[in-house]
Length: 189
Image 1 (cartoon, rainbow, N blue to C red):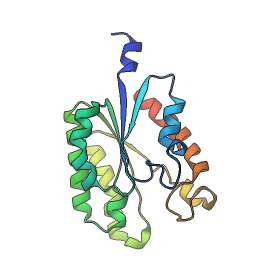
Image 2: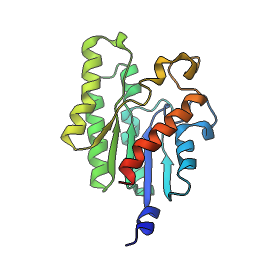
Image 3: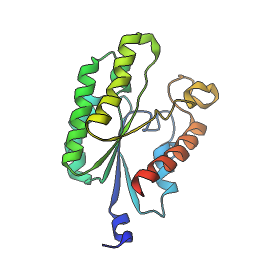
């Protein structure tokens, strides 16, 4: 099979929450749309299945249909933030993420897991258990763990919307460039 034919079969499914769903912005301003534009000559089909407010419960329930419908080669999992913000048990979130990884791998999709972070006001124990879940899962299932893409952006108020949680349009461009560089190394090794 030629490289060109292989490239045409590349499908990246974004399974995420408001951080990938362009919350508070026009869809075309979001990092996922900007990434698709940047890769328009790469023959990568990006399917944005991110939904604002999504939890690992909701994503897990939707995943079988998404896998059947799109047959992705890669899945970017950007979930858990809403579970944490809603105070869901970390064990439940981790179990859901584990099932998402297992189901994706059973369907021959390469999983890319996004480290998520929550505010420290949830307590040290909860916050550490939450963060550690991603490391545990990435090691157990040999999946790529990417650092939280808002790590530096969230510290700059000029890059955040008024709610202080969601990146603004300027930040979306920065995230798209960062993700383009990071994901290109995984998708086009």
